[in-house]
Image (cartoon, rainbow, N blue to C red; front, side, top):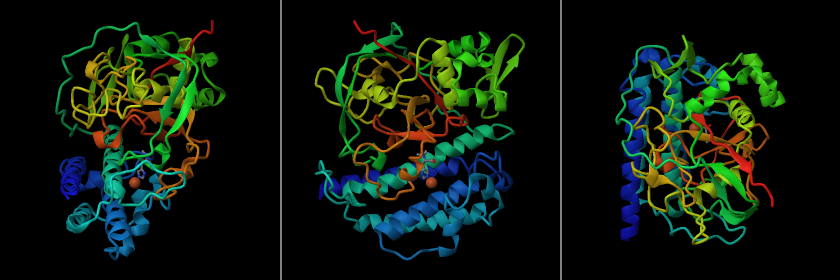
Length: 447
Ligand code: AVJ
Ligand code: FE
């Protein structure tokens, strides 16, 4: 009925929004040579991401959900991320930019066609143990495809950051004027249970499920992400020369890379500058530090006499409401993210200063958890108790191999549909081309 119509309108609008964004990062801003080029061995050529987005949409919306035949069975292999490591994709016979555009447009026309007659299924219901989730339930497969496109858009932004050449991206908005009141810097999260994960969020991936109770001892967590100014103290204190602060594998990484500061920073006289989407600027002291690896985050925390939060500690700080005892969808409540809540969706081309978005604080008074920078946690990526892969093992299960650390909260580059307080991201602990930062935590002293 009416509810389905509204859901379909939302889906059509979000599909359109994500495609404008993808095209804005590719066909609208770069020439063919730049789209086909390999800007870094860590990244795909942008034209690969572009056609991969269309191919994924075709596979899931037209074939799996719509029961249609493949439009281009010959290209599936090219855009399979597991068959082709990122560094090799530039050597494949990829669709040219204009061919990718035509293919994506054709897929999208047929998708909008199937959306009209799709049965989005019942509203999500809390599931019995072992209950099956279906592709269309509460619109899930459409939500998955929308989020997938935005995830690749964020990946393409990381490619833009690595590319050399004149700037092509525009900042839509300057930083907000509203700053929150200063805090003591940390809050004490009281001991006790909270609900982690979800059973019924219609946008949630398999790895966010199931909801389960986690009982944590009391801990302190920073009210704000670690700033460039704070991180610079670690740098200037010789933090990168002192193995005491680093784990064994962290120190090994630091030496191999000869890392002396976050990625894209350079020392200029007595100060530091950074390169951001082709522009050089002074490192802004009040912004969350970004482009640090897990190893750097961990070393800073040890130097500061603290540690990284576990994933459960991050999530409790982000969504536990001590008054109602409930876990919220976002730190500020269940309301969809608006500009006042968080810096999301590539409106800015970087994090906002610490203290921005007081309206986005969690019930416990922790700020900027959503948006600005992805936050490294100390947790290795695995499934929650009772994990069941859905709808395919390669979304998350194949990464449960001890090689990945969990990141939380999304960055300024993450679209609002692709993050929530339960959302889990993961990467290798050495990666820092992503928009990654962190905050610290520490144990509460036991009386
Ligand atoms: C969830 C961001 C780790 O980009 O590797 C993209 C998302 N999955 N295509 C990634 C994803 C399939 C994934 N991350
Ligand atoms: Fe993908």
